[in-house]
Image (cartoon, rainbow, N blue to C red; front, side, top):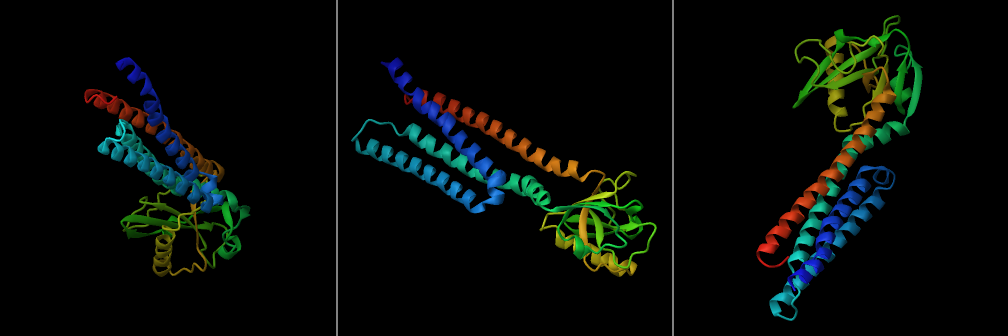
Length: 286
């Protein structure tokens, strides 16, 4: 009799092992990748559908518990309650970690990918407003960072900027700036961000973080006042020899964190199910 009961309970064990993991993985993918970028409303609908599934699981757990309390049925609500909690955790974690992965990795990748690429840009001749849609910019020979005019702005992090100039021609407006976080001095002109010391670096990958841009702009305004220069329409870039490799690193990180999250959550859920089996067996509810 006990053996039959254990065989029957393989079904709820398997359901609680795989369903929360599948819900987590699905929402993690939806919130991380292109659906979230191109159709955010659809992504929100899918999150809502997942939430409805969790609510249904909670309702089933509640009904099973009520029937058990009223002695109208012998159905044990233990696995229903466990399933509801596991699904709720999977729904929350999938949504939250998917959103974080999207914000820090995949959104910058999609943003820059959708912008234009500009070759042979002369910072002494081109204006910032002419390259508003430039995601990857390749500067002309002779373009370097003028570290003597670097500046920083402190707001928890240190926001560092240095103008991109052409050594052969004077600039009327300093519209192109290399940027970085916590890679310069707050007291001296000491810009050490990105590939600042790489002689082959002559390209920029556009800064896409809206939350950081105002602080870099404040650093540029301080540079204007300190060095008596003008920056009519400053644009911000990460200084690099290969913008394509840099942007692909965002994509690679996004997929890496997705796979790591899926694998980690499966192990976590499997551990929880194993603990539940051991715990329920001790109270005769396996």
